[in-house]
Length: 402
Image 1: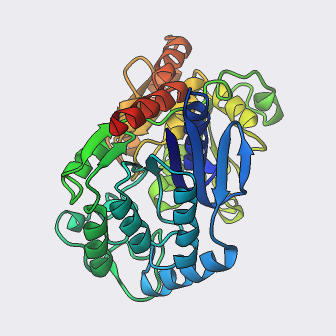
Image 2: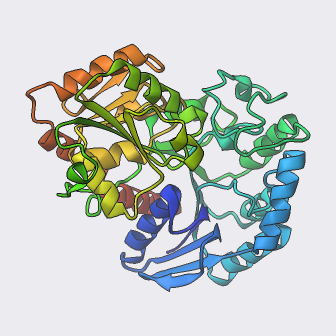
């Protein structure tokens, strides 16, 4: 069985790591070959995985230009997609596993025409809502429901994938509906039940849908002793940690600033992933960092925190929630997307989206409780281990082939 995964990036980034973890597990199985193809990264042959970067930086730049001016994500990269199709044929791929197809690296028409004609079983993991809309990757923040019938005049045109020119959401919606509904052997996988319900309301409702939760690397993310509290003067503080790779408006930075105004000593909020501009605008009682030096340092921050706070306003199943649990730290999350599916009363709290007062109450209840959350968090995290995720995908590959 030859399995090809396709994603924007590999092996870094949240989705890139997921692809790499699934590929490594697949490659270790008997009579199975794992392949990966992507637009950003370096071709390699490691851990039994043949990984190909197809396309060129120049091709991606041109694709990015037409996306930004014409709202044409997925309309460029014709030559690059030809390279991908050649790779599929040369390696006699039995199952194609799609991940993110946005990112200016693949031509949708040419790729889906090939998949339809080849009749290859396709598994498609949706990491966001982009496959069901005419433009945006997330629509909850805008309260938009046009994706259910026909996208037009997209209120999220300036959000990722950003467009400053022509609004092509109507055209894109019709094209994606036609292409994505054309595959006779398509299985949709979502990382949470919330997104699976969204799929069933979209034009993809006829596809088989499965929930496989994202997996956290419990070998990298586990309780780690450190001197972070001493180094940053947090020894007598109740530390609230929040982490994101990009603190855009939907990630809830404003909620954290509001939370800092409601909490007095000894509470201290630490935010990781900020830009220099965002750092300069922080209140004095908030500690901000651009990034950590490594995943081990990030695990140390998770461990050092008394509580992990995720105020995201529009998301699916954030890995940061699972990483915090794997380090033994309870979490408080807004009721956004699949965030509530990571939490039960033994390891955290879910509060109404945008309710900063309730967020403050929940944080205090956890930090001032006599309960020992660490064991419950670790036990909960094991449900979301990368081994469980990869095994579930491997079993799905065998199922769609049979």
